[in-house]
Image (cartoon, rainbow, N blue to C red; front, top):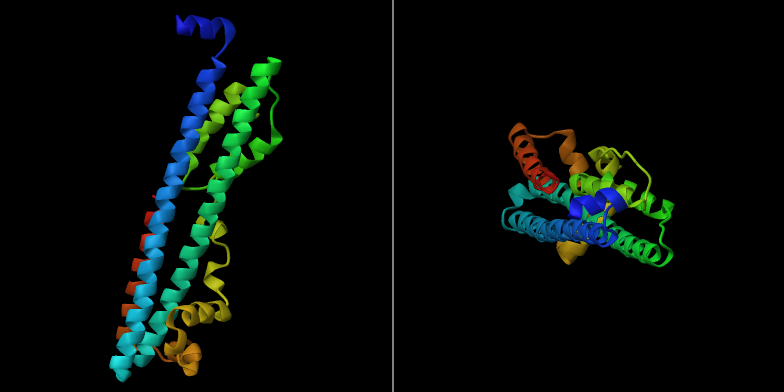
Length: 226
């Protein structure tokens, strides 16, 4: 019977509204989980920086390697914080979309018609391109197209290089700021430039260890996008 009504008079607006809200809530929960994981990763990375610093204090012969590791971890911490900020912004944007969609359905109920919203379309197109939300946001966009709230659209996922543009060119001042925040008075002035000295004449074994640590850190970030 419901299918016959849908064929004759089109989809039920209330059913469309409920489905859109369910999809938005699903995306918000996904972002909340990812943000919590990033907070955990932030805490673990801070612990790794502190551990490397303490190891250098206990064993001065490892001071150079530890100093380089702390800077590697600091860069990864910057990546984590940037991604966390991006997801928090996306969550706020998604909640704004939900409010606008509900308002559009309310107007439709009163006026009997609905107008396509370029504002919602712009926000949805931006969110569809996020790797974390691509699947469910495409489904939401299809429902919004059916409801007439947005026009048909095509959005491609943003490449990682664009999502975190400039992450491989972190300013040394930003790295120093992070280390200063975490290590406070434990960070000697000379340690700020140690990485450049060590990088000029790296020991093969140390370089392999650092590459392994860096790969592990980036693996944790990539796991959040899978």
